[in-house]
Picture 1 (cartoon, rainbow, N blue to C red):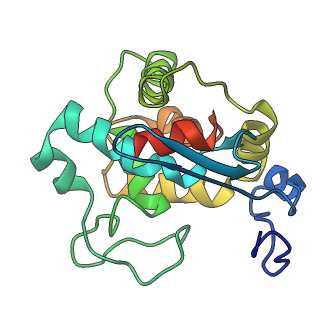
Picture 2 (picture 1 turned 180 degrees about the vertical axis):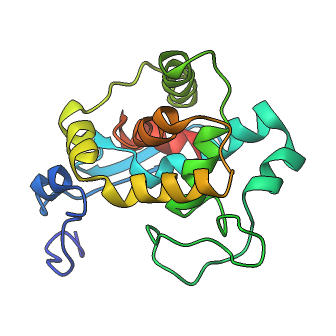
Length: 193
């Protein structure tokens, strides 16, 4: 209740569709190790997972390719730059780490599968297992990301130029947009933690 009326900050709008969120939405959820769920506010309102997907994508890349192969393509150092900077570590020609967009794009390119639909299905099925039910894609957010994702496409091009992803042009350009518009609920996301 103390923070319910807080009105500082702004709704993210780097993906235009995200800017349509109601800034008055407020929800908190906590799940204990014993499985007790404590929630308040709009905790049952679905939202897109966005960058919360990055550690899970990294986990899949590590599972598919192994630690050595992943670390050959993605660093583990802080970047000191914004999450969507079009930059790599000049000393190693790798993204600084998997939690910035350049590293997440390369990690996504390391996920195994026969083709784009197969790899997208693997990602979506993995998130369904993590949250305990099927997950849907917010099509409006996905389309907004596709229409305005020029920075991510530039990062994909830079990564390909440095021979970092395992995939070709089309796969590097389109697959990284997929995990972020998955819809989740706070209680299910809390269970993952």
